[in-house]
Image (tube, rainbow, N blue to C red; front, side, top):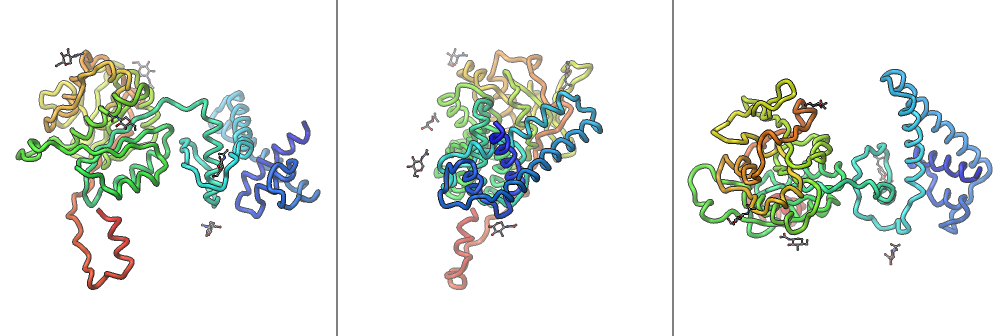
Length: 387
Ligand SMILES: *[C@@H]1O[C@H](CO)[C@@H](O)[C@H](O)[C@H]1NC(C)=O
Ligand SMILES: *[C@@H]1O[C@H](CO)[C@@H](O)[C@H](O)[C@H]1NC(C)=O
Ligand SMILES: *[C@@H]1O[C@H](CO)[C@@H](O)[C@H](O)[C@H]1NC(C)=O
Ligand SMILES: *[C@@H]1O[C@H](CO)[C@@H](O)[C@H](O)[C@H]1NC(C)=O
Ligand SMILES: *[C@@H]1O[C@H](CO)[C@@H](O)[C@H](O)[C@H]1NC(C)=O
């Protein structure tokens, strides 16, 4: 038992000193030669130094938690659980290394904050894989994020930004649906690099709506394609329509997970109205605040509601109408029977803005490159990344 405890302490130490020259196989070696036959064995002196340093680390964790306990009134029970969890977690990360640690595996984003340090990609992949093992029994139900998009100069930067938000969320399945006949290859490459579970689909707007003058029902065929995918492939979890030009607080995703049927929450708007939200008075729902009510039963923003997959599956006819300005209202009405009084209010009873309807300035596509001047330069490769 003493040896096991000792190893545990080494592991804790190791977590804090990845950037030093100590390699994992050196520790594994000490642990009975489990791997890396040619790794150097630790000297007695090194062992003692590890023990001293790891005790120090343990003390650091304890004193940090105690300080938070004093200043923030953390209960003693919570404090000791926290210490235990931190210690366990640090140990687990190393003990549950996968057999294959040479290949970079798809990262599993756990939504937890990793201490910042300069780990190699191989170390990172070991850690994320081990985290996925230790958390597998606690994997939450999937969140399906339906993102309509279309080819334009802002497309890749917007999707880059959004993907980095989603990488912080557990068990996300991203349905990226392009209004195009052919998927943009730069988008596919980006999605592959994120390590997220994703579908890259296409759903062009029908010709008859394209030819229409005035506001077009943009993103409708994409979102309906997303719903079609969910009907065919999902059984539980929650879905959310998340446009690629919005901004999402990562706390939003934990909120959305609570959705039983249909949930709503405030959206920050970058307009004069500033806000779209259900209105709550004396803990009761009394109406909607939105710059454009327009006789809508559900005058809400596309980013202001989430729906459970099971609830959708019970409504085989629900879909989004091709009616510019009435997409949200039409979709929510198609979920009938469903009334405003049944809405679940998230974000602390609609007191926090966690989703922002931001918009990027529209830009002209870039001009083609002058091949005579730049034909043999790096600009060729760069230009291929611009859509
Ligand atoms: C480890 O990788 C090798 C080669 O890539 C593969 O043949 C083997 O099945 C992998 N083992 C495990 C446990 O994943
Ligand atoms: C991180 O480590 C790599 C490989 O050892 C090195 O090339 C790189 O300069 C380091 N980066 C920083 C910020 O220390
Ligand atoms: C369901 O998922 C499978 C596998 O990814 C895919 O081939 C199929 O097209 C999906 N169904 C729909 C309706 O999108
Ligand atoms: C769905 O639509 C079809 C055809 O419009 C209709 O016959 C059916 O009753 C509807 N189902 C539900 C559950 O509303
Ligand atoms: C939200 O309001 C309900 C009453 O309608 C109350 O029971 C609940 O504690 C509130 N939740 C939060 C997070 O404020």
